[in-house]
Image (cartoon, rainbow, N blue to C red; front, top):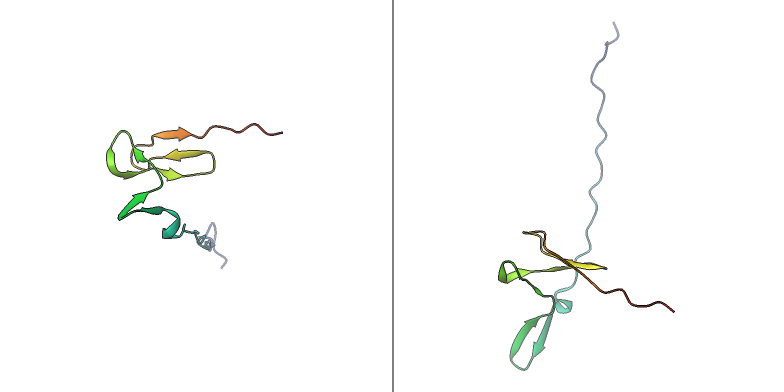
Length: 74
């Protein structure tokens, strides 16, 4: 007999491969110090970095967001 309302086979999706920013683009050397280019989270302080997006900077832990200013297009 045929199955009534049987379970369907599930399709598995392929995982997207994320491109990571190279480390040399995240830090800058000034004299003998290594300086982080991205800002710190103002709510949590030093040690919690803001993630860089095209139009904003965000904190992954608190959700704090700073929007970048739009430049005039001519």
